[in-house]
Length: 72
Picture 1 (cartoon, rainbow, N blue to C red):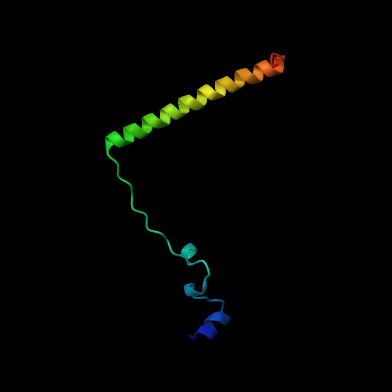
Picture 2: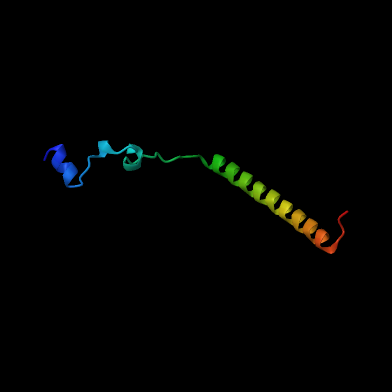
């Protein structure tokens, strides 16, 4: 088949696509980290969760005071 026949049969070659990356799968190499690095990252995540929880608690207290009319 020539290009005209392909076009008429709605068979477009991938090179006709404007966004070729959409059709071309990207090969991802797995990230390998040692145990020490993973534990450090886990500790950092735990610290961030603790920090967010503390902020959430503080905001809840502020909202409670605001609803009770203690803000001035």
